[in-house]
Image (cartoon, rainbow, N blue to C red; front, side, top):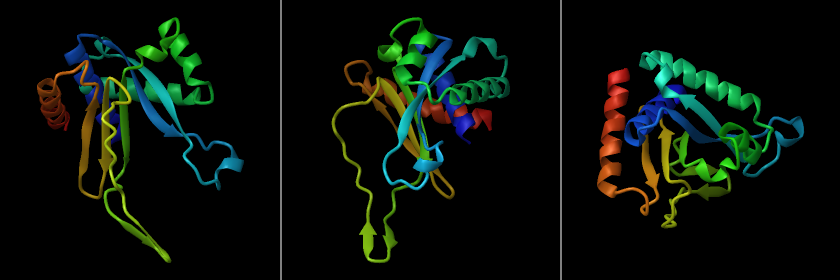
Length: 174
């Protein structure tokens, strides 16, 4: 599911941006050391992946390329983001990592633990973390999400159209 959704997002970015060489950042948990497995806390880092859309001849081939890029990037997950970006982009790439993709478990419902009740509340800060981000959550029978975008860079009507096109891309790929 992750690779298919990321591939469709990459195709969407290529079509809207007119570029076939893309870098998309993805959050991942960095708990590779046994000492961190039992710790509580937010151990999330950003993994930039680079894909060249123009080389693929089909969606299935592109999905394989995306998977190879993600696995290759994951192999270097211990390397700091700035170093990875600089190597991938030939300089200080931090400012050019403009697109983000995230897929997580559905956290929209409340949950109970003996002696504790918790609910998830979305907090809208009025700012975007990247120029364009696709944030998805996967439930039992549904995947839902939203596009987060920098309003100084993107027009709301174009973002709404991109969301419809993303859905159409997924239907065509199915």
